[in-house]
Length: 344
Image 1 (tube, rainbow, N blue to C red):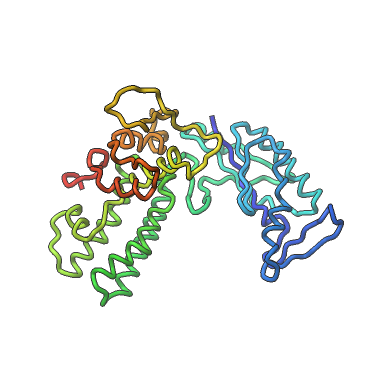
Image 2: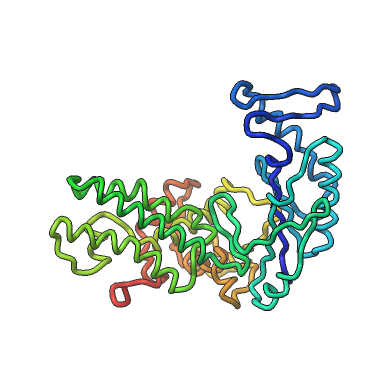
């Protein structure tokens, strides 16, 4: 089974960068709104395209001026593309099919190979197929892996490290570490809830970025380098793998307990009815199978064992995210990490 996703960029459907033209059916007037001069421009644009998905049969996501159609049925998406064409024609908006894309997601290499012969049309024009697509800063690949995203991100982070050492040649150790935590580490950790790998190969590759940075620091300031983990403890840093695991646990807490994150129609976990007092009261089970490389990287599977092993004392009596974060720092994550002093 394949998941087809078509990405349409509403901002490119006849709207220039300097102005947006709307056909106002309820006032029967046409207004030209300048983004730079009228603060109501973005709001009116949202109102204008708010009904774009009313007659669509496939699932869709609308964020600002980006529209994504997705379904496992190819015909459903093609019918919706025809509906979208009619909607744009009714509202006097031009379509640029060449600026849209489609991608077919599947963990099966055979299915990916077959999808190369498939296509979608918009106004009798083929929509180009892509193997990778960037969405909100995260690169998704058709084989449902994030190797491409990680390779690009690691390369960018390494470039920033090089720039950092060139600019701060006279900087102190504290300044270099501070700049690393502010300008470089967030780059590699952005979107980790989505891409956090379960394969050791990618875990080693990501951690290698911080290891090279730490090693260069020891050389620059003539500090003895015994081992990676001892050095980062001396520098007040944590391993990137441990930080990603903590971020997963904090997200699960916000989602299932604090209810700060709302994901409608998403049932990835369930609370089994258990009477074993040796487990904490928030013991959960995953609703997704964990039988392939693709499914092992889902947050429901990669962090489940660690979550269920937390002590009851880790969960504050009164729900508090800050208290939960503080308690997590006291927990020993070593049994749930792939990297240690003997293998890295």
